[in-house]
Each structure stands twice: as structure tokens, then as C-alpha cells.
Amino acid sequence: MSDTVLNQWEEVLEAEDTEYVTVPIGKSGKSARLGSLNGEDLLTWFANQRDPEQKKTNGLWLVAKCLVNDTGQRIGNMDDVLRLREKAPATIKALVEAAVTLNKLDVKAPNAPSETSTGDSPIDSLSPLGE
Image 1 (cartoon, one colour):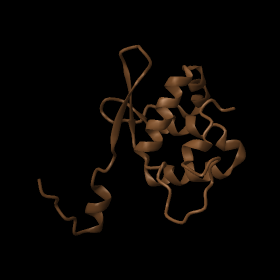
Image 2 (cartoon, one colour):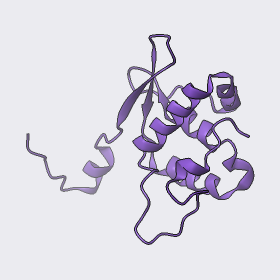
Image 3 (tube, helix red, strand yellow):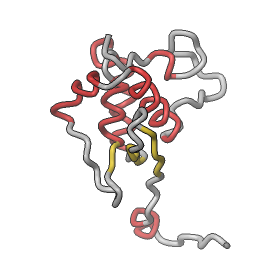
């Protein structure tokens, strides 16, 4: 398969670029589907990482922003994001890690100063349970 080179600005803006991943939900036999963030949401995530209060629940925010249905429509309820804390810790961790990886938030820029607790990746600084 060869890639088609986009030659116009509008073609770039209109090209579908959302990536998806599914994450098993415990032993339910069901999975959640996550879709990658858009640029605006990515900037909000980075801003939240710098705010001590927002950072506490930024992992839950990220999961809620990424949740999509089987057709790719966003289904996360941003007004009720803290209810994700009701899920088992292993499920929350799996969802947060998948969202971080999907959005390439676990890749450290070369020579960038660390903003995480261990310096390894942004996932280290996330508290998915909002603690």
C-alpha cells in the first residue's frame, strides 16, 4: 500500500488521523475503546500536568476524553469523570496506561527536563485514583 501525499492544506485538515485501541475491562469479557486526542485536548492535558490540583485526576480526565464507542464517537462524560474511581484499580491503571501510550505521552523528548516523579515517563506522575 502506498501513501498518498496530501498537497493542499484542507486535505491535511480533513484527513482522518484518530488512532484507536481497545482495553479489556477486568474479567467482564468486555472492552473499552479509546481514541487518540485532538491537538486542543493534548494541550489541555499538558496544562493539567502542570497544575497540582488538576494533575491529581488528569489520568481519569485523559481516559474520559479518549473513550469512544464502536463507531469512534466520543462517549466520555466530562461532568462525571471522577466516577471512574469506582472501577477496580487494575482497570483504571490499564485504561490510563493505554490512553497514555495511544497518545504517545509516554515518550520523553530528547534533552527535555523531567516533569515526572521518577523522570521515566508522564505516567509516573499520574494518580489515576485522584489521590
